Image 1 (tube, one colour):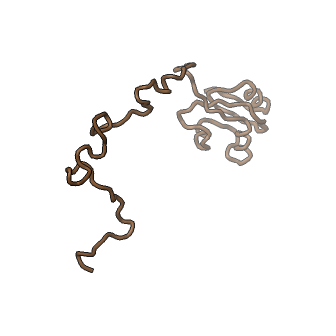
Image 2 (cartoon, rainbow, N blue to C red):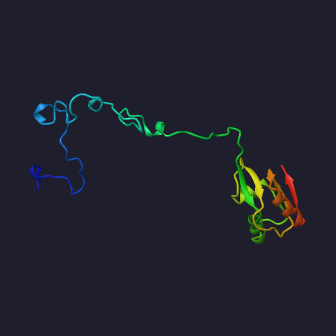
Length: 150
């Protein structure tokens, strides 16, 4: 092995292309394979996302409808059967509050919790939450528990 027969290891080099824009003698000088004139030939060119060559873009052609209510409150729903499951697993005993919801990953500390009426609740629980559906409140009170609104 000497300097005349050195070559990189197999797979270690990737770019085997000709270097562009390095003079006429390189074979890729002048326009540097970009063609003549136009935005694509300029340095710093980048096409906007969704640009369709000046045609009205699809995003602007499609009709818009509906609206977003900026005052909407998003509730994190917790069902009665979920509460019963926590009781069955021995996670909660007599009362459930926001700290319990956060600890069991049913909600985060900044979310508003609403108790929903799916399933049935057999345990006597004091449930503290932001909101209750009518069926959930009735089911909690029928089981001998208490529904406290924060």
